[in-house]
Length: 271
Image (cartoon, rainbow, N blue to C red):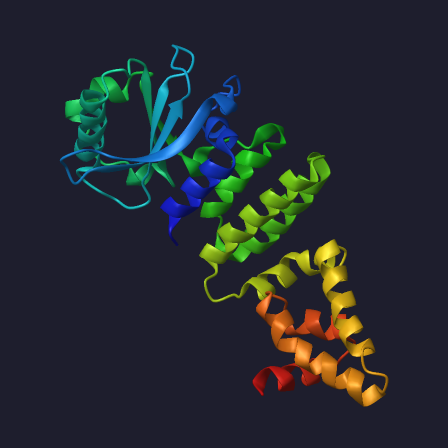
């Protein structure tokens, strides 16, 4: 599972998730942009940096690292990258560093050279399995879904989707949250297709209510009506099947949209 990409996608889509993880709900998330930074004249790249649009003591720059594998020299690399960045960006005065581990056991022992920093408020280490999801924190719960056991991940994803629909009034935000949950689970269950996962999560039922589904269904039926005879309508529907499948619909969804059987759709898709 490519956890780095998942986290950075989460932070780009919802910067508030990062500040929920570190326990700071007072930050104006709109005052930050999340970027990846390549350091000049080195092989270093800092994958996650929250850069404030206007730096103040209340809005420091945040260096973010997601560490899901044991790396005995991690802190030597991480702090080298940070201080090289500070050397190359003299305008930065206030900064914080956040390291996200799935569990405490992956925190390396090589800490002595940086003990003062690690014990200070300058650096924060997050252990996902120890995060408190009290007060129904949807954002923290979505992050913890990344380390959820496979046996319970689907059920947990379904619970989070229901929670999002109950708590969020904005339809666009709810849709984006559902897509993030779906993306996390797709990374976790690589053997599942998007259609199979959607069916397991109960997303298909919601899909049938959307304007997109209704529009596709009407388009398919309209193609069928263009022919005055039953044979003509059937032929037009069969010709529409590859186009609808290319849009990402499942065989079952196309069958319902065109009033065909699943076997008819499967046969037409193979021809």
